[in-house]
Length: 120
Length: 251
Image (cartoon, rainbow over all chains, first blue to last red; front, side, top):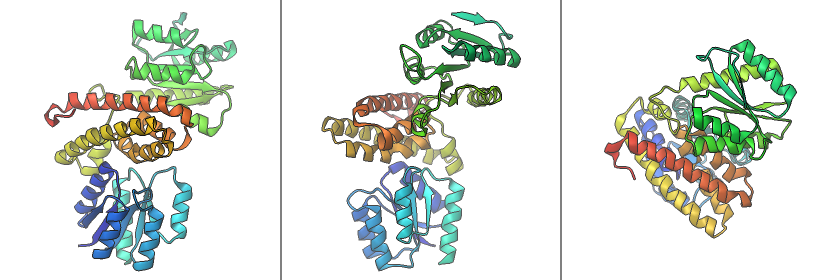
């Protein structure tokens, strides 16, 4: 079972991601903001990270920078909205592997997650 | 107001507000060819009056710069105040993309003048078809299609997600009011960005559109109006949910 960290603050998006990823056979851990995410990353190892870019306390890009420094091989998928092009590009420059637009297409999410998990 | 009885009553009834007589003539010809009933109104207020008296139209086509109230304000009034699920097409001259997006928060489509006959017919047919897709037992405020698709129809997941929508958006809207009083426009943009996917997941295009405006395009001075509108949209959705899911005890 793969362990996935979801970092997101919208409760409906969290619930949907948790439902779909768990149904696909993954172990899902939730962090509601950047601080919680930092704590989880310190205490656990993850096979994949899904993160929003606009988070309370720690920005998505600060978080990505932290993850890339500590665990450079952990794949990251950015959860974005369609209006965040510039921020997404910046995230790609920092080394994120993929992005998914919210609300996500269930099949697209499964495929993208499986692709990155199988690479690792 | 004149009613051009061009088609049998069982065909689509289209209300039109168009001040340019040449363009109006083109519409009349199109309606005749397509067997649509065209009702020509002098302005948006007359269209509203007609809807109050008849409430059986299938589409409203209204010019953006209609007088005394703009096309999108009329569209908004019809949907929000009259509560009618009437699709609206706004007609306009060349406008920037941002302005067009803004109009699409209130209307189903935008047609640019001068009209091209075939593209007008296509756009109207498409909008009428879309309206027909909504079955009578569904409503104009939300759809569970996305959640059904995501969960494979899991009732527990859907009930819990509806409860989350009702409680969290209610609380976020209260926060929006607070930060508006503090004139913290940056925070307003952040909140709107955060709740936009929730409206999107219940397929409420208007709520999503208003959140988009608040997040990225609205001027500070426009925010009080948009926040009021978002509250109205939420109340409509929530009231419908309360009615449809009494067992969830939503407030």
